[in-house]
Length: 395
Image 1 (cartoon, rainbow, N blue to C red):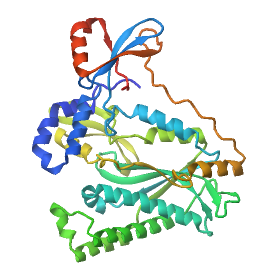
Image 2: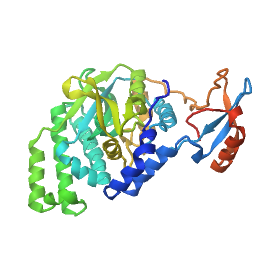
Image 3: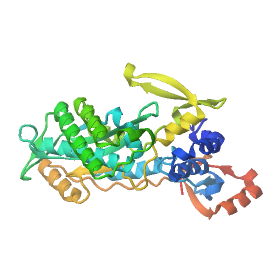
Image 4: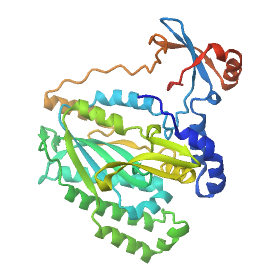
């Protein structure tokens, strides 16, 4: 994919300081750190290294990446390494894709309690899958699955939901055999929705009773027990969205899907269309009207505000494994599943080297010298005409 002509970093560089001066009272310092990291990413400010082609001897300077998980330019390496590890764990069965979405009435409360409520979304949705799968009236098996937290919609507004990738079957409750699900149907989504709603509302009520939720500004109107009880009653009367997509045909399709959905940020640089007169235009897909492709234009301040809505609290894990695939039991459970399925464990695949290619001959570029930002500035001042800059995701 070609390098985009417009980047989020360009917008932050032009409008970030004025945005922060006007709105910093509504954000935490972690948001400022994200903006600073995006601006500095792959610039001389973070230092870099001198690369040399092993084939033709061409030399080029590469700037370091910021490695911030919210930076649109820093996800490629992390994604490649993560996918290499996951590819060795896939089972030779179809996989289902199930999505749990929280009602929009909770969005304001979530923004003020991200760590608690994103974790609650994971725990209650995963518990719903595990509980219904163990029910003998349905699958009657222990299952394992992978969850990916996304907090945004295509228009960059808050839209918390979790994508689950689930093998089409599981281990019998006594571990004696593998139980296949229907190739076209995994679990009833209406039943999942009811269990999910019940679990989330009950545990949300517990958080309120334990005084663990924060209510600031306009949310103070629901901070009283009666008002919060009314909110819960409204939520319990709604149909919560649980969506099951058609199953993947094979492991390659699963990996292709994961490559699109893991290590994503709220918006990629390739969706940006224009930045003119302090207004940002970006492409988005309007799912409410048949998934039509549209272009939205907002002020730079509004664009940055929406972008920062999706900054996660430090340490919050947004890719999680559950059931048979939970970290503490994954190795043993995968071995048992493969044994029952008559499958051979995948050989360990070599991790991607992420080595840059020479722009002159496509040979391998190797690092021959690492430089601090001060050394890099000095080096560029002296020898920039003889060196070509090479933008790669490296450190």
